[in-house]
Image (cartoon, rainbow, N blue to C red; front, top):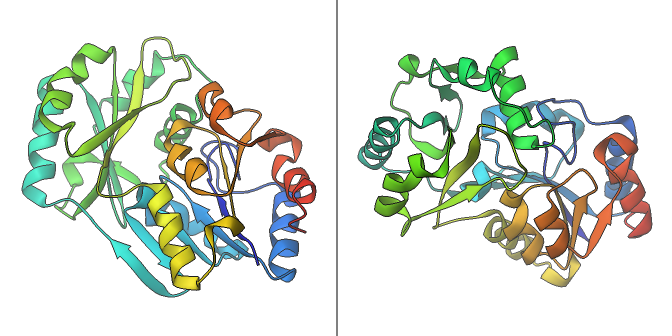
Length: 273
């Protein structure tokens, strides 16, 4: 039995959408029928990943490893203390950084972020495309003034240049990994603050341990640098052709793009179906 872990945006689906190609769905069904287990492994929170669960998965690593579920069992749940997330947001906002915050069941975004993104180019950046689509189409993202204090797992940042992140990095780099997307986007630095207490790779290991499966029998698919820990943890790491150049260098295999049936073709190549 193999454990297969799939990122969503830019990997399983076109960035910012919730409908995988039919070829990918057929491959997932075939892999599971062959006795393998398939999991989502994503930076999305539960609210944003849950529409994909209808397609049949054995669990998920959500919130970049902050919320991990195997079957019906929650293996890990690690949000930030409220006082810490409030302080981080204050520092980011004071330095002109635009933020989206993710609780388990909702996401909240600064009201001016849509206007900020309107002037940004960079369609090759899957995370940026995802957020532009999500904000424009209102996919479970509410305005920041509606934030109700629910515990946060992750903070997404967007700013004009890295200098605007300097104060937050100086204060919080010890406890948070600032994952900056390496695909160029003119006029925008985007990425996310992920608690160093968890990552996608550790989420993968939790599920493997829960199921008693050796890491030698794991495969992971991703496209951006927030997939790096997953790619490094699994036995076979696969990057999509539409993915980050840096991630491709760290992966064992580069497969066809999501728009070119990459998941299905790689499943066949790796004999997962």
